[in-house]
Amino acid sequence: MNLMIIAGFLGSGKTTLLMKTAGEYSRRKSGTLAILENEVGETGVDDLIIREGGLPVKEIYSGCICCSLRLDLISTLLDLEREYNPDLVIMEPSGVASPSKVVDALQGYGGEIDRKIVVTLLDAARMGKLEKLEIPIITDGINSADLVVINKVDKAPESDLRNLETRIRKIRPDADILLVSAASGENLDVLVDKMLDFAIPAKAEKTKVKNERTNGPEPAVFSRKITVDLPESADSEIISGTVCSLLEDMENILEQKGCAVIGHLKAVIQTGKGGYQVFSITDFEEPPQAKGKLPKTIDKYKFTCNLIVYGISKFELTLLAEKELKKLKLF
Image (cartoon, rainbow, N blue to C red; front, side, top):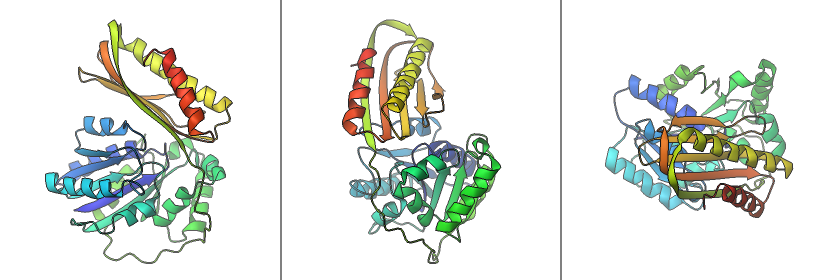
């Protein structure tokens, strides 16, 4: 079994990239592939998208697999190995997970891992903001990576991309860097080639820039899952519009309160009729993005909310989220 870790800060596009590369990998190579998904908070969102894409997925919630959930990581990997015997497992750690600690957490794993590949995803559109916040896991991700992937190149000018490459090489002069757009598909075929060919029999010592700082700002996290029974069937477009407005209202209030960075604001509607829709915001300057499709009318649905931000306290975030949710009479 081979293990590919796709790491990256919140909102860098890991799930979109995972879905597109995993699908292409499966088409070009016979063999089994499985996904291991980790989200901070009591509920998950991205696993729903992955499962709808037809890929076997295991989830680990309520913490970070590099820290408090190490035993869950080990046992879940063993379950995947026993149940599916996959040729490749793609692990997507939480966007607040330290990639080097994820690798360390695998020490002592009792199963068979032939090779490990660490791919670190960077958000070309937001790197300037994130670097100002001085989040250590970004530097750690570059240091830990076998491949550094700069995503969202279609949203950044050429000069910004060149500057970002220069900053990466100050941290890792020997870095293998690939520029892609998970949204448009640019260079994803090259990444899949690397997935097929990349082997690590013995990893050379990496050149690192000394970084004394190990503690960065802590994210505030809010997650909630609610079952909503409507008094009568409602048009799904109205429900979708209401959830979009909810996230936009939260985004505006967070900006007013001085929130430094949005990791992600995510909400999902899931119906018993098989439909779902996921809404997400990862930047103050962008509107909510929607994926999935709902049936025309809804009378009951599960609503999941997962918020991770920097710059305000968990207490403030919880008060804000609960106040906004109560306006919708969701709980």
